[in-house]
View 1 (cartoon, rainbow, N blue to C red):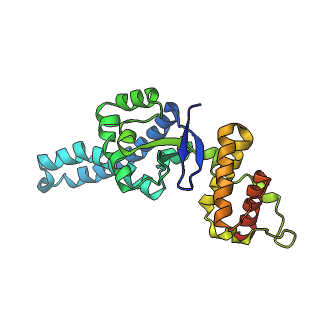
View 2 (view 1 turned 120 degrees about the vertical axis):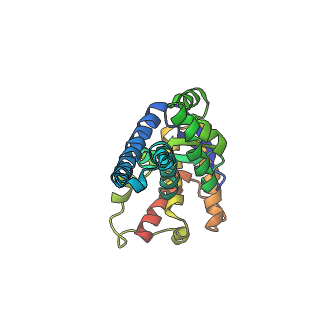
View 3 (view 1 turned 90 degrees about the vertical axis):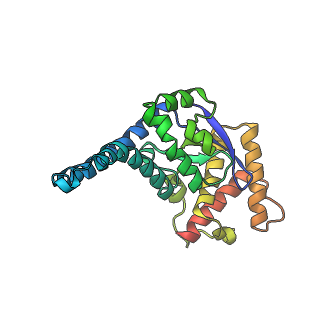
Length: 248
């Protein structure tokens, strides 16, 4: 499985699994079905309306049956990825997500570039260009990704706390949080901490150890902890437990 390192805004380098061509193809197929169903419904309404001679206009016919599918496909990808934080319905079903390679959150321009360049990547080339670029590029980027500095990663397996992480905390009565200021963090911050710990425990290498050190130093500074704890993994796990207790 191909991976990619992305340095977050917290200056922590996280390794993500790149979405393979096969999974991106199935996500695209699901999205295409959704767009087709919506287009078919709209086209049917126009067909019924055009039974009236006042609607019998060649230009209108060309727009509805020629340009509308292309426009609908672009608009679907643009708005779905904006509203669902980089996940169209197809990507959500496959556990995929669009991310920027510089660690920033993708913006409107990024999503727009990705949507517009689907015309070349996926529609006019029947997916040939997209498939070739994704399978041949180091970061699995199609033309839209190259223009927007994005790629698509797997998130399903790292997107939620494991059940045992929560079940280990029975109640607020028998657990006293050690770092109450952890409430200043967002859920995304805590997911980032959990994912870094999970990565380190799964792949114990120098890069992940350095990521742990950077993360602990960063979090310690935000919590006004002068001396970072010696047991860095236990410190981060404690932060996760404290956050769950204090915010649930």
